[in-house]
Image (tube, rainbow, N blue to C red; front, side, top):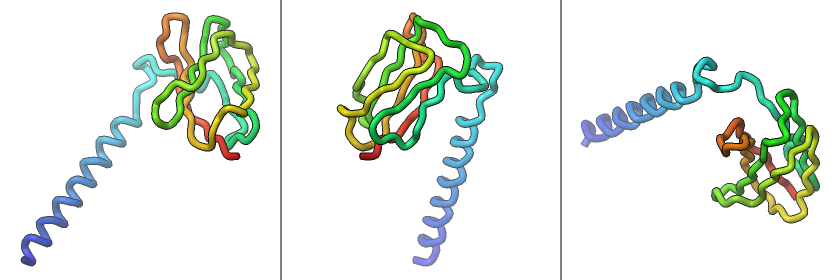
Length: 119
């Protein structure tokens, strides 16, 4: 029985180490692979209560759009008419975590991030 307990503990540690290694690998992308180094837009305030602002830090383009998804992956909102500074009222949003995706005119994701709504 003692051998099985030690073997089980060994497997748990092995799985943990492998998982940490893959997580580290996935989070360290090389900027030369087409990934932007700095963020294009900044959402604030986080957490948001009544409204959230999206400010372009640089690289503003009118053809961009923002799609907002809830934590289940359902698209909640799509904004196609972008401005350099946008204020989004959160009257129709429930409390929780939301994901935004900044997309170009072909629909490719340029940037994504998340924000929290607390009411």
